[in-house]
Image 1 (tube, helix red, strand yellow):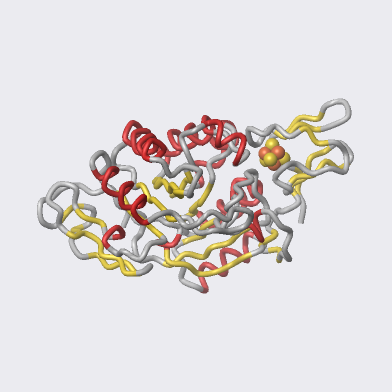
Image 2 (image 1 turned 180 degrees about the vertical axis):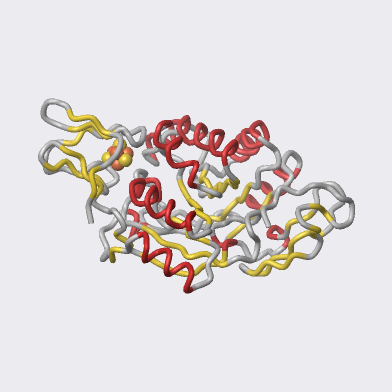
Length: 327
Ligand code: SF4
C-alpha cells in the first residue's frame, strides 16, 4: 500500500525528500536511496506503508534491549527499506533486496499483539525509520491498545521527523557504528553527526540502549573502541552499551571479530560505563546485569532468557542502588 510521504518539497522537475540526511532529489518515476519512496507525478509516495517482509515473536533481549521489560516477548516486524549501505549487513536480503511483503493494517497489528500477549511491537531487522508514515499510524494504535513501541534503528533521520515520531516511542536500540565520520559517510553511506543527534535527543525522551558492532578491519582498533566508549560516557555513563561480534555477511568477507578484541572492549568500557554487554560470543559472563555499586547479580541471562535475581523494583535488593531498568 502507498501513502503520500511526509517531509518533502516539490521542485521544478523533481522532489526533494527531507526525511534523512541524504536529501534525495528524485526525478519522476525514480526511487530514493532507501527504495521505500518514489516520485510519481511530482509527489513523493511511501510505497512500503504497512508492507511487511518479516514477522516473529522475539525475546526483547534479542533486539538487544536488556533494561526494558527484561524477559518480555515482543512482536517484531520489518519492511524492505534501509537508508544505509553497510557492506556487512546481516539482514541484507530484506534491507537491500526486494522480497515478498504482506500488508498488515494497524488494527490487524493490534489484534496480533493481543493474540500473542506481546509487550508491544518492535520495528526491527531493517531500518524502521524508513517506515515512518506506517509507524506513526501503527504506533498510535499500539499505544492506544496499551502496547509499547520499540525501534531498532541506525538513527539516521533528520531533526524534525525525529521530533515527530519520538512521542510514540518507548524504547530504542540505536546502532553507533563508528566514531569516524569518514567511514560512516564513505563506507556505510551514513552520517555520524545525525546519529549522535538522534542518540542525544532520544535519550531525553525514551529509554535507549546502544549497539556497536565491532567489524574486522573497519572499527576494531583500540582507538575506535575507546572513542565509542568515551562518547557514550560523555552522554550518560548509565546508558547500556552492547558490543556485538561481526561474522562475514553480504559483501564483507573478512574473518569474524577477534574474541580478544571483544574482551578488550568489554573490560575497557566497564572502566567508564555502568552497564556493558557483549553479544554473538560464546561467553555468558558479558550478558548478565550486575549492580555497578556492590556487584550483586541483578538479572541473569542465558541465551535470550532473562531471570530477575537481585532487583526490588528498579533498585538493587542488596545495596539499594537505583538501576535504570524499566520493569
Ligand atoms: S528517506 Fe529515503 S528517499 Fe528520503 S532522503 Fe532518506 S534515503 Fe532518500
